[in-house]
Amino acid sequence: MTNKEEVITLIDENSNQIEQLLNQKIDIWLEHVLFTGFWWLGVALSIVPWLIWFIFRNNQSTDRLLYVGFFVMVTALILDVLGSQFGLWHYRYNVIPIVPSFLPWDIALMPVTIMFFLQIKPNINPLMKAVLFALVASYIAEPFFTWLEIYQPKTWRYSYSVPIQIIIYLIAHFISRRNCFSKLD
Image: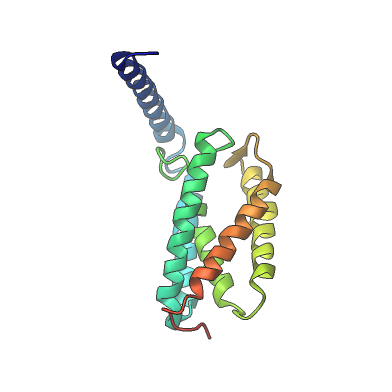
């Protein structure tokens, strides 16, 4: 068994290596990513969905939908960071270099899409909507970002995302139907 000083030394050395790699990543980002077309695309994909949602949202359900959107954002960010950190995939052309997830997907595209799905035809079977969302996200959005070479799956397959997307949508649907909110029209 190692003593406390050895553990501290190992952890400190590991932290220093991570810091050096992050500095290298920032340098690459500053020199090769910032202000490129892909970077501007990421910025636009982080802002434009929210502008569209703001214009076309159901005003009576704004609070309810934002609550759901926040849940989706947090969930997507956590899962995306975990997948990236465990080497299941990685992203190129990040909007922010030290965040290992694709922020446009996690903070805009996914939550806004789910919020629209929830407010459009609210009486349709949520499982059907969840499956539709999961199929579009997994077999259209992910391959599109792979084709653009922004998203690079390593050991991850698009099919693995389907049940996760379904579960996220169904939980979002459940949250949106809580009694402490007004009903969707």
